[in-house]
Length: 297
Image (tube, rainbow, N blue to C red; front, top):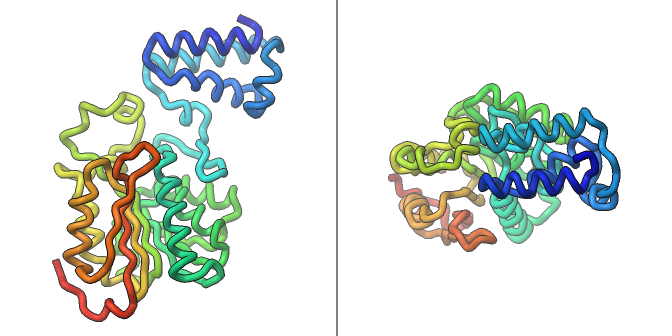
């Protein structure tokens, strides 16, 4: 096994036999060889250095045995066309979260226009993918990125520096409390909070259960604990015209929508499905004309 195609064939077979993603072999080889996928496919007959072969084989076996995510092995993950550093302190960004960003960018263009200077908050920022992407896609915005985890914020700050996102204020704190304390009002509030019910712990894949930070995974017994807390405090931090967007777990659309309806009964609340036809996002677009009286929970 000294040629690229031989290494890929071995990895694909070994991963498949052990019910792991067979594409991981490609991702690891691209990383260790420092090449793109197109370059990888054009160098299938190339002979690899022995040290690369040995490291590649070891990491494939480690992934199969212990479920160590390939993103942790590589130390990075793609999101919205950019590369973000990740480690055990943050969730690995998922394509579904890209859909949250894509949808809110479209809503902002309609409701506010693309050149307007907005204040945006990302609650539970983790590695910073939402906050950083919003700031880079809308350069005039000022973004508040909040997380209770100091190790996670350190990863987010490093990603912002690496990617040149310099209009982000990183704040350690719980949910909306830092915004309330500083009397900050925002036009757009986004969050991908912990939403897995604690009862689902043993049903998670080992890649998630053993390697993602539990602080960022579990939303209490029901999975709704953080939505309830955020929605309760929304009127304290939102401007009179605003957009709120949540990522949710499949099947949580009705429950999260109901929380928002109790707070904003006159506004349109939308549940959107992801590319896999699973409920994944809930949005409320708050109309300035309607936002004169809030009904409390």
